[in-house]
Length: 85
Figure (tube, rainbow, N blue to C red):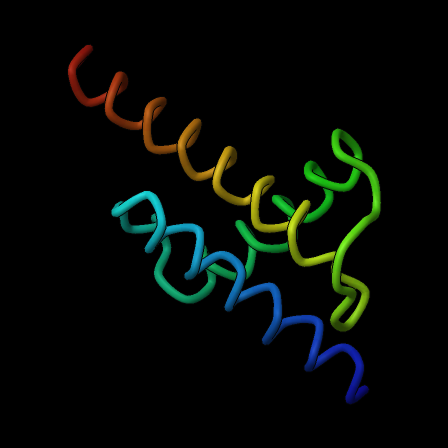
């Protein structure tokens, strides 16, 4: 149970940090940060592999890069959808 809580905390921090780096808010607030961190971690690990510091099942650098890419794509898609309507 404690490892799951750490998993959510680290995922949220990675999602928040990726949003800060890009200067964009993650849709969904804290839940969006957690989702962006977890999904970004998965994407980053699949594309970049597992390297760097490991914190609670997250490899920090690939997870952060994956979360940054994910937030960039989501914000771009949302911006395009708003222009289309």
